[in-house]
Every structure is written in structure tokens, then in C-alpha cells.
Length: 359
Image: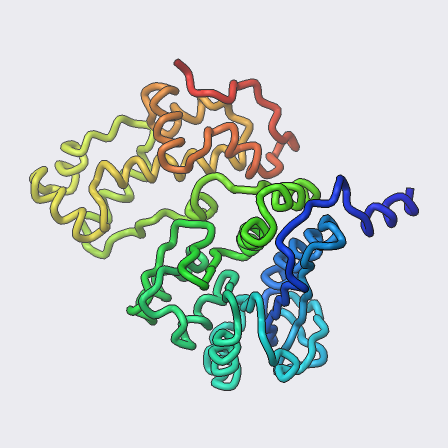
């Protein structure tokens, strides 16, 4: 078996897939101390797997890791990565890749690093970032006037820090001209698959995804993977009280008129102040809160879909399916398949619901 696996790892799984004829596609990854290992290794594994599936006559990816901290760079998780000095990144670059990491604050203060990224970008056919790496691109002035994304938790900070960049927190990745920015951590893998598809076609991208046991195209935006509500509790006491009451009574119908009455406000004034303080209407907030509670129950319990719908205040299972699909682009069962953790009973996905919305 070991010999078979070794042989498989060095050869294409199926027939080689022919692609555009160029000598090679040079991918330069700029690494810095405290960068996140998966931001670096995830895309690299995609490119390396694509190389193994390419025909001999096709242009392979040549991966160069460069760093001011060469030859050994310690990532945020403690994994040490070997890299060449920044000077080794001279010359034409097909794809410049910039990762994020917990040390991003220090990296943004490193003018040598930021300047090098700016100069290297000028020699690159395209420039890509993973997670917080988009901050470094923006710091170098590369994203001014462009759309970009970053990790959902830092999208507001990026928009404030770089007002000339249009930050879109929803997509898995954003492609604007020669710049491709991906969202949180693992989305660098999604982005790398898209780059492979652009370079060599959908067939190779699909074969690469299949070999790595990945979705070629992930459903929905990255917001579906954040475990926090879009709106935090308001500072205005009556609105905050209303939000807390909503959270404690999600199993009830929650008519807005009743909530306004509990806040000792007229319906019209309550709706106006709520939108000002929370950034959304009371009805939208209630729906998002119900969906957030449903996600929690789908992830951590073995309750049936019908039971979860009831506990989250959906009068009918059909309504729950429509709201959940509209918000996340997945059915409740699809979400549970992907994100359920081990429950107290130790069971995972032992359910009997259908995977389609009731008629």
C-alpha cells in the first residue's frame, strides 16, 4: 500500500489535462514571521497538486517562498517554513501571493516589507492575498479604487483604514483586474482553485479539487461561516432592552408592535430608532437572530429540523427552509452536514430529514 500511495502521489490520477503552452507559471509567496501557515500552505498545495495532474507539455507552477526573515520563518502556529531572501524574488512573477496572520499589525509597520510588495506587484501578472494579506496590499496602495475582501471579522477595520478601497465582506474571494483577494484563511484554497481554472481550464481545477477532496465552488458567502450576529447590542437602553428580550423569546411570534410597547415607544419611533442604533429594521434583526440560533442548534444538537424551527420561532418548517436558504444559500441539513460538532450524546448527523424544502 505504501508503495502504491507513493506512486500515486507522483503521477496524474487520470489522463493528463492539456493547457496553455508557456514555460512555467512562477508563484512567489512572500512570507513573514507570524504569518498563518494555512494561508501559505493551502494555496501551495493546490498549485502543487495541479502540477501533478498536468500533462508534461503544460506549464507547471514554480513556487518560490521569499522572506526578509529567511532562511527559516516561524509561522503563528509555530510551524517553521523555509524561505529564500527577498532578493530571490527578483524578475518577472506570474502570481504574487501575500498571506495574512496574527502578526499583521507588525507586518503593516514593516516599511521594507510593504515597499517590497509594492515593487514586486509591478513585476507581476496578478497579485493575490489570503485573509488579512489584503491589508498589506492596501497598505502598499495597490487596492485604491478597487473592490477587495478580507476576513469577515476585520472587514470594517479595513474599510475604515483604507477608505479608497471598496471592501466587500460577503464573497469568498474578489477578483478586480489583476488583483484577487480572498476572505478568511481556508478561502485561500478556493481562490487558488479559481486561479488554476483561469490558467488551465475548469477540467483541471475540478480534478485538483476532487483529488484534494474539496468543493470546487463553495456555496454562499463567507458570512455563513461567522458565528456572530451582524448587529451587536445597542448602546441606547430601550433598544438594548428590546434586543435582549428578543434573544430570550425567539420561540415566540415576536410582533414588532409588541416589542415597541415593551420598549415604551411608539411603533413608528421604535422602528426609526432601532434602525439608527442597530443598522437594520426590527424585522430583519429578528430573522437574522432566529437564523443564528438555528445555526447554533444545528451545529451542537441532534434536534430534528422541525424541532429547531419551532425553538427558533418559525411557525412552519417551510418558512424556516425559505429563510435559512435565503440567508445562507444552504438547506438546514446541508449546513448540519458541514458544521455539526460532536454532541453530548456523541452522535453526528444521525437524522432522518429530507434534503429538500417541504412543498
